[in-house]
Image 1: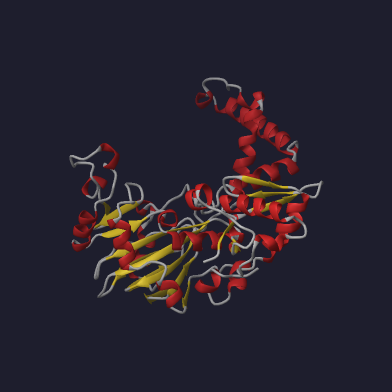
Image 2: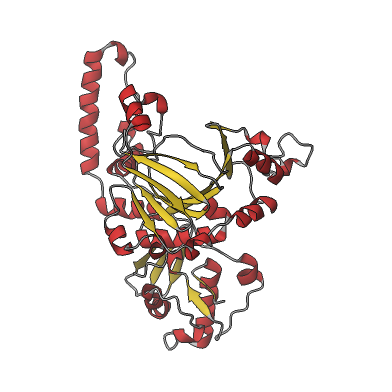
Length: 406
């Protein structure tokens, strides 16, 4: 596998993929490939173009979430369709007051970051999403907290001081988010007065790895700070178990109503618990593991970001010829099923593309090669004739599996 994205973020991408570090790490990477992902000018464009809406942006001031009405058109006399649009001038004023602006789901609103997320997901084998954090000089957005997923933090402009402490909750789940009130005095004394496991200043091009559950806080220094946080998806035994239990909804026996008054009759509740454990054990032993794995695979594939499409350029207007230069978007395909008749199914996050035997022989080796060099429809010959090659390329282009070479 070619680590085109991970190699920009970590010095040894193969080792990182095989065994992500269990402790926080800092890497001083070449700045240019990373600073180009998102700049302050890019943030101005995002805000100024009016594409951002409530839910895509959060603002934090003095440790509190700022109500969206303070930076959208919700309280302004404007067409209702624009009520949730983020107002650039309001964001600017909040930044001048020391607030931090969080750009959630940046992988959907800013193409360069989205492209990296899709590629990272392919290389890591789990979905990767991203957001960005803009903090004015001398300010702090979020105080001590942990994330239920592991993250790579990429500094693109300015500088930020980070402190990272050992977990207070080992391997927290998404259902166990950070709750400061749940920490005892000993935990807080360690976080506030103890020596961090890692303390570092990130500058443009630096990358910080924070494993899931490690407590961290950060503050901008004498210049505004802009960084991207890449979140690495999470699969646990618990998540697979939950999928197994959901299959029991098909059992009428497991859906039956239990007797009333169980809370008042612990001895009866104990009998019911034993009965349910027995039923659960029997139901799990009867699970068709092959069918369950196939179903779970499809579910997991749908968690990856969908490919980039160009519905006008490659849909209404696109004319693909036999000599049109193309590039394979390997990461657009989350999996390939080989069929007994020699054909294949390409699984995208939101679609499935069927290939017959000749199309499979022509295209799948090219997809498996994961080569960034351009090619043409004619290169699919002799497995396909010229017309068949162009038709297949057009189909893949509309799906986002190939794109024009520029």
